[in-house]
Each structure stands twice: as C-alpha cells, then as structure tokens.
Image 1 (spheres, rainbow, N blue to C red):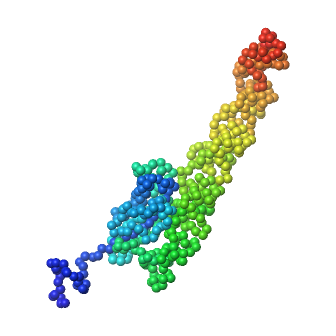
Image 2 (image 1 turned 180 degrees about the vertical axis):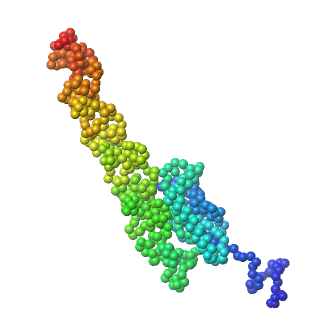
Length: 511
C-alpha cells in the first residue's frame, strides 16, 4: 500500500471479518495494567470464639476484619481486607476488588490452627505493562512493608487488641464480657503479586526460592532459567518441594512461611511461645523445629504437657503476656513469699498486704483457706492465731507474757512470738499461762481493776466446806474462783452442793 491509500478515519460500519494484518497505526491510548498485591495473615485469641453461635462467630470475624483494615489500610481507598477462613471453615470473601481473585496462591498454614485467616488486597496502576519498572517494584515493596509493619507493630504494642476490644463491645451480637483479659496474637504471611488481575499468578509448579532466601517454595513462574531446563527442580505441591529442598529444621518454615500459629515450649524462657517469626508479635518465639518441638493448639495444653513444674495458670498467662492474671487468691506457705505465716497468691503491687507474690512453680501447694494452710504448714502455731496473722485480722484471744507475769489480749497487744499459747479468756490464760500467781494477782497485773475482778457468782470452798462469792473483799467474798470451779447464780444453789450444811450455816459470813 502507498501512503496515499492509508485510511486514517474509521469506517461507517464494522467490518464483516477481522483484518488479516495488524493495524498500520498504533492505538492513541496507552494500555492500563493493574498490579494486585495479596498479603495473607492470621489471628487467634485466648477466647473460645469458635464455640459461639454462627451469628456470634460472624460478628467476631467482622470485628476482626474491621480491625485488620484499620491498621493494614490506614490511608488507602483501594486496600481491602477479606476473610478467607473462620474457625477452620473456608469463607467466600465478603468484599473483593472487581478484578482480583479472592484466593491466595499459597495458604499461610492450615486453617484450623487459627480462629481467623484473612487476605489484604491492594491494587495500583503500573508504569509498564510488565509492572517491572523501578517505580513499580518500589510501589509493591512499599505496600507490603506498610501492611506488614503496621500489623506486626499493632500486635506487639497491644494496639490491635485495644481496637479489637472496642469493635467487640460495639457489636450488638457479642457479649462485652468477652473483652475481659482478652489477648490476641497473629502472623503476616508472604505477599504475592498478580499482574493484570486476570489470574492468580500461579504456574502450577513449585520451586525452591534460593535467589531471595525466603526459606520456602514459590509457584509464581519466576523460577531461574536453569530450573526450567530440568523438572528435577520443580514439584507439583508445596509439601513435595519443601520435603526435597528444605528438610529437617527448615521444613516447618517452608510449609508455613509465617509460622503454623501453634504453640511450643521454650525451656529457656520457662513458657510456651507461638510458632512464628520472633518479630511478628510478643508471643512469637521463632519457628519451631518439628524434629524436636511438639506443637499444641493453645498455650495451656502446651504448659500442661511440657512445663508441668510451672503452675498452669501462671504459665498460661506468662505465655500470653497477659497482665490481667493476678493470681488465684489461694494461700501458700509464706516463707516462699517472705512472710512468717501463710500468704495469699496475688501480687503485692495490687496494694493487698496479705499477698506474698504470684505463684509460678507447681511444687508450691495452694490451699483454699488460711486455716487449711496454717494447719498443714505451721502446725506449731495456734491455727487461729496463724490464720488471723495471715489475713491480717484482729485476734481477740489472750496470750501469757511470762517475762512480765501477766496476760494480754492479742487484739490490743499482739504477741511477737507466733508459737505462744493462746486462751479464750483472761481467766484461762492466768490459770494456765501465769500459774505461779494467784488469779487476783494475775488479773491485777493484766490491768483488770479491783472492782472488775470476779463474777459475783458463788462457788464451793471445799477446804472450809462452805460457799463463797467469786470476788475480792470482805465476806461473803472468798477470793476469785479458779477456772475449774463451778459457779452458781445463787448461794442456795451453791449450798445445795455441800452435803451436811443448811442454807443458814453454809454461806461464808466472816473469817
């Protein structure tokens, strides 16, 4: 064709058949190519949300996604967080971008290890059709870095938990009590990209990613040229590829690039930690070694199996980094907490002076009451005195001050010696504890006024075979009765106990 015959304006009607050669003029509009970035993640908590009703589980997942989106997509209108799995059940994303697929080409880990799995999807328009310009690559890296940093940072700082708790409280379908002592942990997986939005970016084969040292296998079609020349480098499944190229210690990380989300013991730290990169949250302890580490679905079961020497409630709270746990409130031997009697299992920082510290180790026996603890651990101390000192309560019994030959009421003058004998009454204390003094002398030394001595009742003076009054002074007072003397309300009742005496000659009247 000559230049003069080239038609530059559109025909009046569409062609009956397609042309057999390309257009002689390029399109006047550039092609628009969309890059899609999918970043998977997972969330679990110490609350059994998965045992709730379907409506409550849906509300829980919705609150979780609203929280994820708040942190992962703070300033982006094209960023969307969607649920991929809730309580082990796959979910159809509730919201999705029109040109994006809702499934990730590589699962973060088995769904039943997490309460919620999600994917954060972000899109932008590339400079080049291949989305490989320096600006395109920088944009991808910036998006992934923002999502990962924001999510990991909010988990570690506790901000995610705080916002999540507010979302739960705001939900009409959930009980606000669920936020009490709430703890949350999670992981962020490796992001995947898809150019054009027409597919998932999958090639169907996996290859070891040695070039980027990610420690896992990829299926993004970007395997090096030498791998494409031989099928020995390629695998049909992630597990097959991980088994072949990342055996032993590396297998778990290969299969679960962000960790399995399960728990394993860290003997070095004396608690259980989550199988995830140590930088992905406070509970993460690094990747577990499946050859030597058993994995557990929650920290409590891990503590019970692996750290049986730690007190289970403390171990669970310590593993979860929970500041909510304040001890059981039960009682234990106090010298483990710097006390002379039993102490309560709680934190002294709470202001309760009966606390001896939170029990960490299982060898420390806990008792329901102070009396039980005192009986078992301090049997040389009067159980009531020990219990009163334990709970710091007033103790109204008497104890003998043998150095000063008197009896004292413990509530008024506490004994400095815990192995001292205690008595229900001043009378008993004087009779048994200060026995070398007469009752009157002991009472007087103990601060009882003369007019307060005695009961003014009657008792039998068997030496003189008559009845006398329990008081100090002139007849019929015969001195203070001993603790073992029966007392009678009247002289007649007393005289009835003295054989051979009548009421007229029984009562003591003069020396």
